[in-house]
Length: 179
Image 1 (cartoon, rainbow, N blue to C red):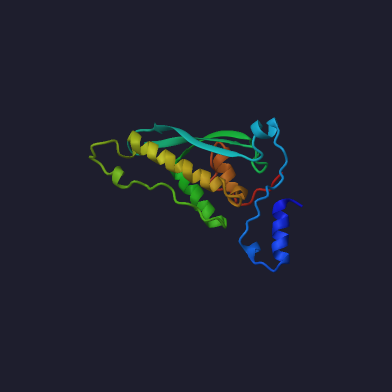
Image 2: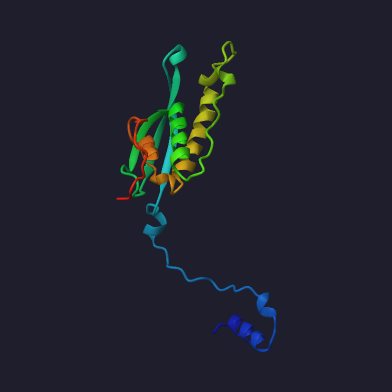
């Protein structure tokens, strides 16, 4: 028994109330960490980046797509690395599917920026570089929040959105079973 334990035991034996005020300062014994633990790959990780915005089309058919890169070692995902392109309306579809079919509270998307879509503006509106960057950051934050949620990771719509080349909006909603 170390000296701190003896002092606490003696105080309790003598009817003292000091035990309520003394914090136990002993350290928990943990497994020593080796180099592989310290510098090896993390046990579970999920990295999602939204980057490389590209504006395509002309006039009223003009829109911006974003590259979504996923890297993970979570067994629920069929691909450990994937790269797809999505536009804002695809993110709206994903959010709607998750709200309808899952028990997850889905965070908001960055706004539609209706004012920026008005004609005769002095800038490029929704195609302005600063707006596209602001939206890109908001979409990345949205995806990381959603994909990081354990219940959302079971949703087929999320897997399709992150890993399939195109989004089949006529799919049958279902859960993903871990392999």
